[in-house]
Length: 240
Image (tube, rainbow, N blue to C red; front, side, top):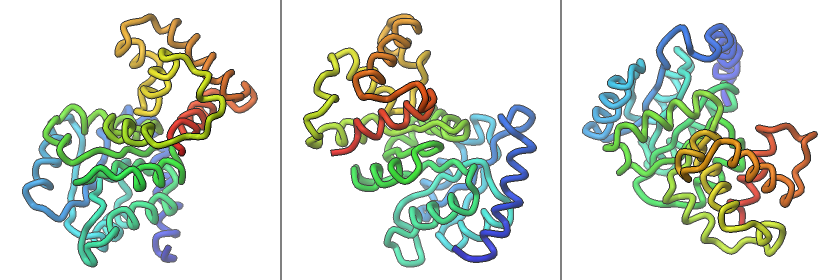
């Protein structure tokens, strides 16, 4: 990471602290996408949701624009110019190091469990991973951006399904009931207890009981803290 980014990182953290909760202003989103049609579609979706959105078409511009005016959330493709390799995700990881409060939503043309797991395991809070085809479903993208801006996670359900289909260690996860697994899968997608209750058509108090039982079976103690236990439970679930 360059010295320039590190210096701007201090400034960006201060800006976000001043607008904590984003209640006083619209979310600021920076988009990195080299395909003009897709880029314009993303901008329209975000602006329709009341967000301030700007866009660039390559990873170098993404780094430069973020350093000049730190956004709340970065939305980026994985493969971008100049090298058309993993430029987008590499830039996103650099910028997350430079701006600790930066939310990142990664868009992918293909379902790749490796990228998703790497992102979540690196630092799971404030991270989203969506398939590009979901951009057309405007509410999905806007919801993901809002979740990661609040420090949550937003994994595409298809990505979660792929990840949990991989063989896991036969440990405490095997003791979870089907309903507890359903709850944990929805936690992995980034849903709150209220969101899980709505999805499963049960009460929030019932979800809280399921979550508590999941924590207990996975050996996650109250001393770890509620949000930290959620992250640990999700990571345990997604790993092989």
